[in-house]
Length: 323
Ligand code: NDP
Image (cartoon, rainbow, N blue to C red; front, side, top):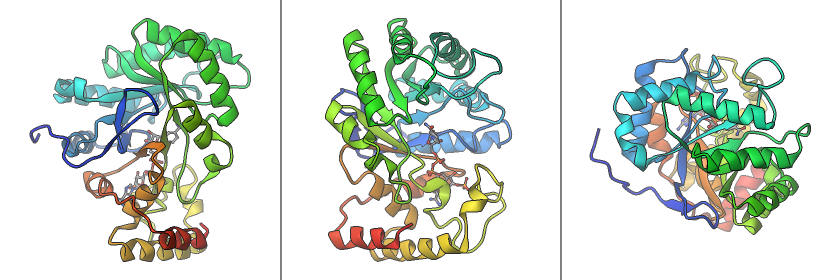
């Protein structure tokens, strides 16, 4: 491992909190499971740290099987990366189905607290830096979820809390509850990309800004669509090639025609398409970080070179593609 330096990566405060995050963070949703090469996993994590990426995002259910991404992350920490624990921000989440039965899904106090205990064991961490409620749960009173998050912080299992997939109104209510409890609620994690702008409509972006919360956006490359991955064909080892998450249905001739236009705009501004898509997603300073996925170190190296200074013409040209 190279000497640990932050190189050129920009850091932004997560909203009005004192927590700084790198503008590019790495997520372990895909390609970090027991089905993937451990050497490649280790290589990607070490490469990320070498490049100055300090933030790693996991969830209880990342796999397959669920939990295996956390276990692998723990193995890499125990293999040496753990020496850098104080230079890392590690997050996990609970909210989607993790285990069968009434207590392995949703937003109850029982689920969240049991789940973080399991996640800490799998990763062999003493605490998470950020712990998220993974999705809004209409069946649990928000007060109960807020009190569970508060207890998680007060019992030392996480330093900060966040929520994911909440709209503006839901963020507002959770913020009011957690403010009353003085829980350090610092971040919202929605999806956002050139191809998915729903947070501009559902209030998640503007409300987070108003409340002083950071926003870290997931799937900023639309799961690989907004890259060179599918320009020529569907590689076997790609997410679409593996038929994961319906990606194979998204790589249509119509989509590829639009991707080619975006690729030309990126090339005209001296970037790859992946670099332009990531730059676009953090162009507004209220977006703290883009949360990328990767299947190789090469992709991570490409993805940290951003240029957020878009001209109006460039932004219009991107909008006109209408993906
Ligand atoms: P992206 O949109 O960044 O897609 C990542 C995929 O794009 C990679 O796996 C790779 O695909 C491809 N890719 C990345 N860089 C390049 C490149 N330079 N050139 C070519 N292809 C590239 O994000 P994800 O959808 O993976 O999500 C990122 C993270 O966000 C997750 O790991 C997770 O932490 C978080 N997340 C959170 C959710 C939530 O509900 N809170 C839901 C989903 C994600 P390939 O594997 O085919 O090579």
